[in-house]
Length: 318
Image (tube, rainbow, N blue to C red; front, side, top):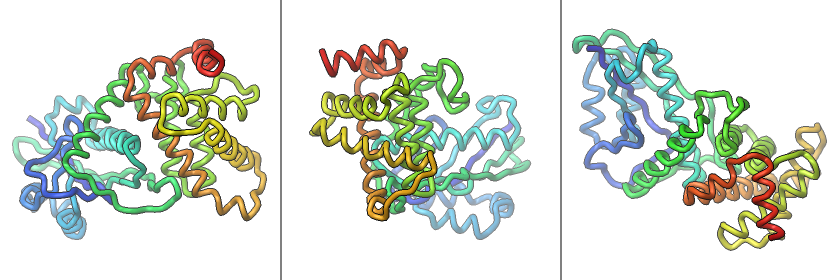
C-alpha cells in the first residue's frame, strides 16, 4: 500500500497557546504547533536529507507545521507532482476562507510531498504557491489565532467550499465557463486582488469582484454598481449610510477606470490609494460574510441577470 505525507508551514500565522492535538482545518489538512509532533514528523532522516537540513530546521523553528497523511486511494491516479499541486490548490482555498474572517497575508511555505511504499520512503517532491499575498493596503503583519478562531475558520471553509462545489464553481474549473456562479467569480477576483503588487491594481480587481456579484450590464455601470453596493450594505450589513458607500465605490471605480485606460492620478489621490483599497476589501468581506451567514441570500445573488435586476429593483424602489 502506498502512503503519502505532506509537510509545510503557514507563514505569518501564530497560534495562541499550544494545541493539545493537531487541528484539522479541512479533511486531510492538519496544523499543529506541538514541538513533539514537529520532531515526530521530521524524525525520518531520509526526509531531512531530501528537503535539506536548512529547510528542515526552518520547519522545526516555525510557529506551526501543516501536514497531511494520505492513502493512495485519496489521490487517485495522479502522479506525485500533480498530487502536490492539487493539495496546494486546496490550501489556497483555505486562505481565501480565512480572508472572509479578516484581512491577512497568510502564505504557504514550500510544501514537500513524500511517497512511501511498504513503509519505505520511495521518493519526494516539492512545490510552493507562487503568489505573494499582502493585506489590502499592501502591508504585511502577523496573524494570531486561538483555538476558537481555528474552529470558526474550519466551519466557514467547509461552508464556502461545499457551496462552490454544489455550484460546480471550484478552482478546478475555468471561471469564465458557462454556469460558473457569481460568488465563485467574485472570489477569483478577490484572490487576484490579494496577490496584486500595489494598491491601484488591487482596487481594479476589487471592482471586478463587485461587478461579478452585482452587475448585469455595462450601461451606467459606475452609478448602478455604486448604488447597488450602497443599498445592499445598508439593508443587510452593519451601520453604513448609503451615501457614504455610494461615494466610496464611485471613487474606487474612477481609480479603476484611470488604471485600465492608462490615465494618470494626481499625487494627492495616489496617497489615498491604501485607504480606498482597504475600504473596498472591507466591503467585499462584509458582503461575503452576509452571503455565507444566510443561505437564502446566496440564492438571491447567484441568479440570472433578470432575477438579479428584479432583486435590486425591489430593494431600491419596492
